[in-house]
Length: 178
Image 1 (cartoon, rainbow, N blue to C red):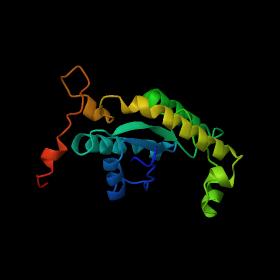
Image 2 (image 1 turned 135 degrees about the horizontal axis):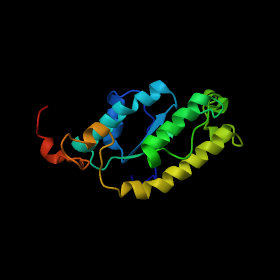
Image 3 (image 1 turned 45 degrees about the horizontal axis):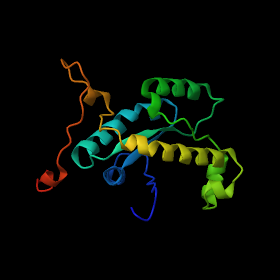
Image 4 (image 1 turned 90 degrees about the vertical axis):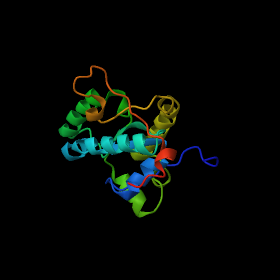
């Protein structure tokens, strides 16, 4: 931690062991979302996983935001889902989006960052803008109190106010067999 300002852990698009380990090791999580039906439906499972990591083993974990990715403004459904997601999650949806661009695929094939491979591309500009936005968010989101991200955990029938996470003492739980 003392050698780097930010470390990004890119996980496969599933909630298996690799992603779980990353949630336990991280201070923040950024969730990429393709602004389409299947990707948006999967958010509930990501929210549940983040809530579980937060309340069991990683009380410092905070959701830094949802990143609209593979976004193409000319595709009507992308605009519709962007509006829906921004309406539902408000400031949790990052302002910057990752465009659908061949520059990303070309950079990967050459094993180079897009900011070097195609430095003047819209893809490179989007990556740089996203980095700035994430770095600006970290102080504010890191100081926020823990909260549930899955709506089913926030509201309990018969209780008017949203619930706050009950964080377990990880040291006390270390001796338990589960």
